[in-house]
Image 1: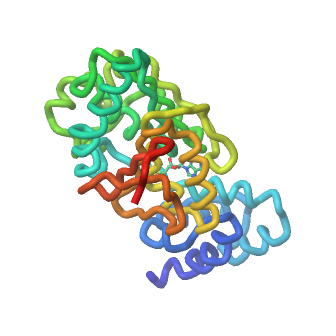
Image 2 (image 1 turned 60 degrees about the vertical axis):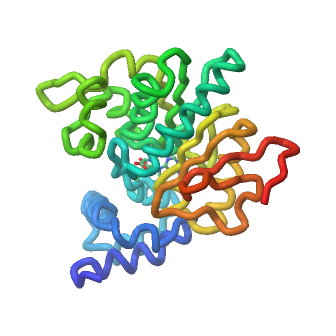
Length: 277
Ligand SMILES: C[S@@+](CC[C@H](N)C(=O)[O-])C[C@H]1O[C@@H](n2cnc3c(N)ncnc32)[C@H](O)[C@@H]1O
């Protein structure tokens, strides 16, 4: 623990469980949260984070502000390369084949979509490679209004594209003065919604649900189990759930979820009547 942020660490360790969040998820990325908390304390005219804790103890309304300060919004295109390679080669073609067979569009939900890097990655892989002939609806949700506004604009700096294979960058983006903009054809039909996954979810069923570096990193165990139940509830039978490389599902999480062989972050919801191990 850096000496300079001891006060912030103490505050977070006290406050996060009260918000249904867990310290372990924040340990490495606490810098941006601590910066926001100091700014908030300053805006309230308080002298440091001990005084901010006193304010929280006295004013229940301040917890909502604290919760907003705890959104970690880091993301990038093609984050966790191996996961996207597996999606690209194994999962998206299977979803496309099924949608084609059933004569319907495919449906994807990105929960905690940040500025859109994740849902746009899926959309670009779909349009350029997996299934240009099948429509894909992407619903992307996040609790944080500023990141959603950026997602809708579809503009990104070069740094957030550095893991995306160059051929996709060349085909899916146009250059702007400030960086790169997702081309119109990959933005069409993308739906961005402000939703708190603890309280609200988009209407399913979805063929593919991504929930990465949100519930299974930052939520406390009971909240992780509740989130998993909601996510599974939104999956179509035979649909796919994707989590982050550094995440695990809660241990008693989902007997109906079957791990994709060789891809420990990708799970398939068993069809009714299917025998699972
Ligand atoms: C670390 S980012 C992950 C972005 C993307 N899924 C990825 O893996 O790159 C987590 C996102 O979850 C959002 N978030 C945090 N709490 C949330 C909640 N309760 N409901 C919906 N979104 C939430 C944050 O605003 C942030 O944009």
